[in-house]
Picture 1: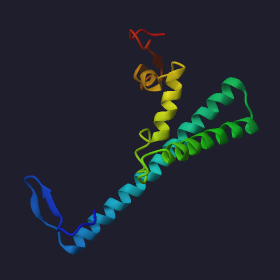
Picture 2: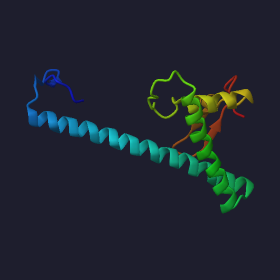
Picture 3: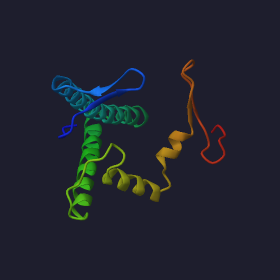
Picture 4: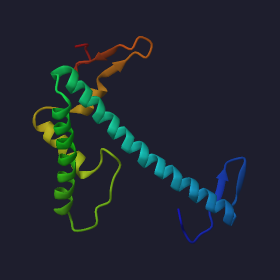
Length: 147
């Protein structure tokens, strides 16, 4: 948000004026804090998702701490390895980190899953959740029927 122009505050019907230096510093600080919170939230979301999968794997397959640790290490290593490998073969320009789900390694992982017929986004689109009862309904992707 840092620039060599004066920031204007525009709230239709309420205010339309140039911010003074103090207000600009406060607005920049708020912007920076919002970005910091978004990054922290993104990291927490990724942790929550991975923790959920580890619990599911434990409950379904009874894997213990050591196996779950190896699975976790494999997940971290896969993403880091794909990230560095795929970014290195790019155009030679500095890679710009994208939102979670839009990075080059995210796309590569989705493509690898697609090769075996897995489309998680389609699966997610076919889920209905009843907040009242807690029931989850998994619909058939192709024709919208309950499975």
